Length: 226
DNA sequence: GCATTAACCACAG
DNA sequence: CTGTGGTTAATGC
Image (cartoon, rainbow, N blue to C red; front, side, top):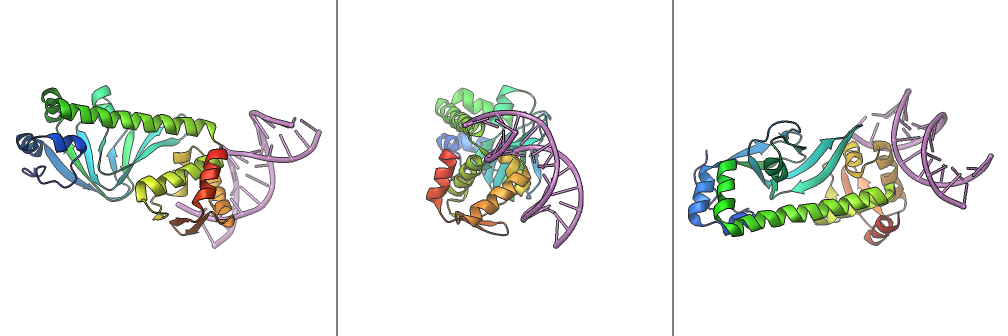
């Protein structure tokens, strides 16, 4: 276990920024850092929850088995907590988390984490705020998923990945087309067709895994109107 | 009915 | 894993 590593951690969560030096030292004694390679499972749906997990860097997909196939609930870019709802809401992990890029995660003892919530209201507030933001985002995704057509969902997803994950109109998509289908609630064939259609219309360009958004305005329009 | 949409299947790079 | 074509079920004029 790495001693006191949290005190000087450069990717503290908002909640951890609030902790005192003493609390950070205690956190340091209560957590351990692990590296994950792309594709490795961080949380498996159905297993008992063990620790609070915080990804320091990398990119993770949160996914869950549906009646017919896998659904990716959302992509989580570090830094962020992982699995708080399962840890506090249930003994069993309600979804899986898998690294889609090489990632580093801290496993934090539940007892230590809970103690900070009991004793430090501002810390607790930040945790609640993060959970609320996630719920709001999930609700938005849920609305879009159910009311937009496939083209609209793809357009929206591409915009979102470009803005929120890579902050760049050109990015290397770390997902397969099949996973992109799981993310947009469609088949991998439709993903393939829509991507080539977008390319033909000059909205995006693809070179292998690299996607560039050329006409963001048009993409927004498709996202809105399908 | 006929057109459209999108999933499912199959097969080839 | 990706790209395509054919088929098919559901839905909307």
